[in-house]
Every structure is written in C-alpha cells, then in structure tokens.
Image (cartoon, rainbow, N blue to C red; front, side, top):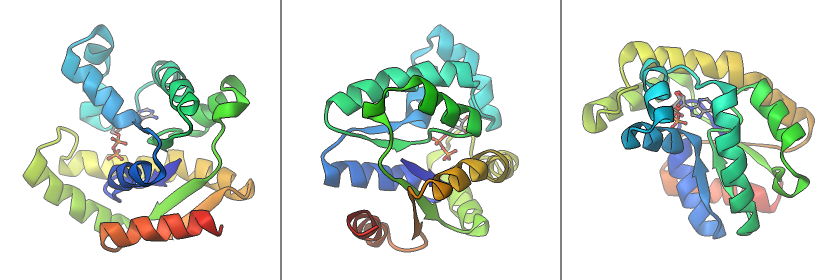
Length: 184
Ligand code: ADP
C-alpha cells in the first residue's frame, strides 16, 4: 500500500509499481470517480463529497475495497492506492479482510506539503479535476495530517513502513521504492 499527501504522485507511482510487479493497481480515488462518472446511485451520493475534498463515508468505501482487494489478491497481489485513509478504515482492513489480502509493505511517499500544493495547482490548470481548487487542496492536505498520519504511525510501529523521498523524477522515485522493497 502507498501513503502520500495529495499531489505527491501516489497514483503515478502506484501505476508504475503495479506494472513493474505485474499485479493490479487498485486506486480508491479512481474507483470513486468512476462511480460518479457512471451516474449510479452511489455516484450521485458521493459526488458532492469528492467535490469538497472530504473523505467518503467508511461504510461506503470499505465494501467496495473489500470486493476488489479479494479479486486482486486472488490474481497474485496488488498495489493499493488511497486506502486505508483513516484509523477506522485500517481497523476494518485488519478485522474484516482475510489474512491472504493483508499488506506486506506500506510505502510512505514523502513530499513536502508546499511542493504538493504547487503540483496540485499546476494540475488544476491542466487537467481540471473538480477537487483541485485552492481551498479544497488545503483541506485535503490537512486531512493527511489529521486522518492519515495516525495510520502511518501504526504501520511504522508494526515495522511495515518504508519511507521514500518522493521529490524527484518519477522514474527515479519508482527505482527508489523497488530498491527499498527488495532490501527493507
Ligand atoms: P488525492 O490523493 O489527490 O486525495 P485520490 O484519488 O486518492 O486523490 O482521492 C480523491 C478523493 O477520493 C478523496 O479526496 C476522497 O474524497 C475520496 N477517497 C479516496 N480514497 C478514499 C478512502 N479510502 N476513503 C474515503 N474517501 C476516499
């Protein structure tokens, strides 16, 4: 699993890693945005939440991830991008998901908040993602500190955390992650 501030390049690295490792890439953000685009009942429910940069309710996200993670693990493994996002989701992962899908490593892609904000504002201009507005960006960066840092500290205590400096060319960062996973 990959942990990072929004804008740190988490999805980019997850995609590159999944390709290198030959396993599926599971991005909860992409799954949720696909739901919105499909116009499904779930999509209509969560569209305003995504727009505000808030977290979608745990009881909606956990079943979606459980189903896809099971399928991915059966295919030989996964790179998980965007889950767990808070301690409650991590508790659900530990309690409700079978041993076969428990993570082997947690990579923290470390990029300073200021650099993340700069990248997200640049992306807003080029891609137009609806949650890339200045206010929403600050809110999402704050959620990293309040909700995700406790999860990261938990994986550190478990000895599963691999901290990688993500402030470099994307292919250099992928090599750093692969190296660290080979020799933790
Ligand atoms: P970013 O890393 O830029 O926040 P993501 O694609 O990971 O981008 O997430 C985009 C949005 O999707 C989040 O702001 C949140 O609304 C929602 N989301 C993604 N993963 C989760 C999750 N595990 N729990 C709740 N909401 C989530």
